[in-house]
Amino acid sequence: MIHHLKVILVGSIFLTGCSSVAPWDRGILSREEMAWDLNKHETSLQGHMYSSKEAASGGVGPAGGGCGCN
Amino acid sequence: MAVKRVSKSLRALSKSAALIPLYSSYASADAPPAFTELGLRFTKYKEAKIDSEKVIYGSTDRYDIDVTQANLITPIGRNWSFTLDVQHDAMSGASPWFVGTNAYSQPGVIMSGASISDNRTEVAATTRYYFDNGNSGIKLSRSEEDDYASKSITIDSSFNSSDNLRTYSVALSRSNDEIKPTQGKVPTGFKFGRKNTESVWLAISQIINRTIITKFGLSYTQRRGQLSDPYKLLDMRPNARNSSTVNVSYRQYFNSKNASLRLDYRYYSDTWDIRAQTLTAEWYQNFKFAAVVPYLRYYSQTEAQFFNTIAETEQAYFSDDYRLSSFGAITTGIRTEYDFKKWKFELQAERYKTDPAWSISKGKDSPAIVDFWRLSLGMRYRF
Image (tube, rainbow over all chains, first blue to last red; front, top):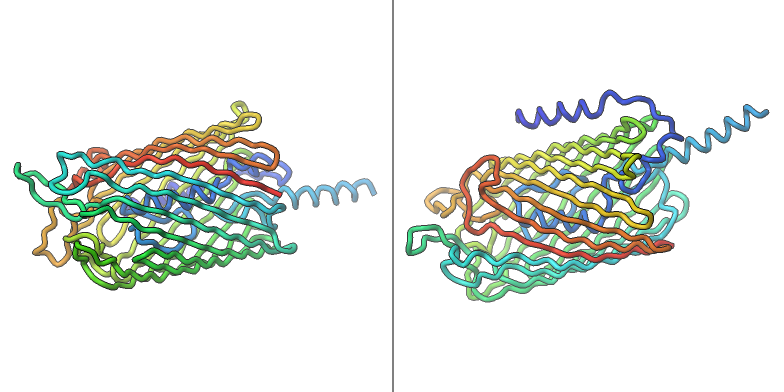
């Protein structure tokens, strides 16, 4: 729980201190490599690979269905 | 009059510039995609042989999996999109059955006897509605294996703040799974089981300046039902597991290098007393028609409270499953992308290596932890 709180605190700092960015000044942010999820195939595959080898899973986005691998 | 024209242009520019990828997985704008995209990807996945000194009985081979993925995303009208994802896995190999003691009183693995082969097919369909300051989607998926079936539903929404600097996202999901273990020479832990999973996910993404964007997310998941592994001899787990995660993500573009730094951190904890941390770093280097993306991932977990290297079967709950042991893992990989007209080609190689000594916790470990490598080749076509 304490670690959760630490990460939440760090996360809160991440979300503050922003300056105003005009809509016409956001071209860089719309570049493909700035997206949270670069490649749906890759994200889906990684989710399956890691959740079948590791105890931790989820958290990177909306959860999907299960499989027999874990 | 001139002022009016400028103002109109500015409004139009503002609206189009606001259509940026703030969402996690599905949408890149508050409007449907402007194109139809077809994607196809092949992956060869191979687990490393288990060290023969750690095996008491059985094959040292582990799993090989051939994965085929296909997807279609297309706009429908002015406010909708439709996505279809299909994945097929062809698996074969052996897996650890239980951990015993060898002639030198050291823990050793007894592998499942004959090679196991199985096929899994997953189909998922998503429809999404886009409105002025966000979008909402519903996803239905079904996964079938010889011995396992899962169906799930996910509903998600994202909303932009009035200044379009912040996006709030929420998702709810539920899956219902059925397990019918294949009966062979090796007895299974049970002959039929059900598992239900419910999850909620919340996230806030924030534009910091014109080159930096961050995201902060929380999730909570509860699993109920048959959570033991039927193919492990010594595996008796509680029938409830609640887990939560905290995520922080960071993206920064470097103009001078024409490259982006991508960082993701996750902290995980659950009611089986497992704590895990994951840190992923990617460097996305652009070239004229291509991109090269080297990446590094570090993972560390503690063991479950009922895990032991050799299962303690006198306890109410026990397991020797290596996935519940204490270990750390390092993934190194590189992905290359090449654009050619309406096509995008990609090639990716990855190595995953585990070691109990890499765990932050240094707890109870397992001789059965696994390493793997994989190679992926993909292509996408937009029209």
